[in-house]
Image (cartoon, rainbow, N blue to C red):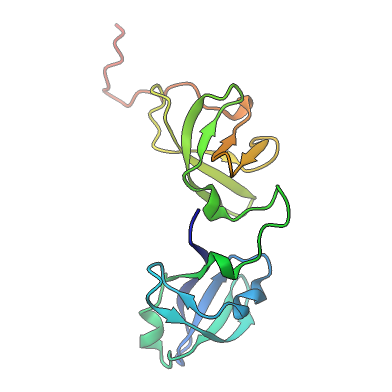
Length: 185
């Protein structure tokens, strides 16, 4: 399991006084103020949010020590993490941190490993589980399935696997690219 959990990402500067757009990934976005300090991915650089306010589809944050637009620009796209022990444990078996899913085996309902989880995405219509397939006939670099009980009925973090329902398993090879030899006539 990951020792640091991603809780926010700094976006572009907001104004000229060093404020930044902040995209928060915690269930309660205001909780990001309770995590002190926040760190970069290495855990070496530390950050403290001095003020936070809601905006249209993000938050606007003032980060201690960042006083102008130039300093804020240097933080654009910086991921902010907290140590795992700073977060509460999941409430139940259906609650988990996305970081705990990365690297889990993706198996079909028969238990055959068909890939490894590489990411969870949210493009606005709900979470999507992205995995790198291991089936030899699949040419795609990654495949995506809805991260719902219908598509992913079992998430077994201790067992290091997720089960994808058969209706969502991609078993056919990708279409041959133009000019690719398919072995036929």
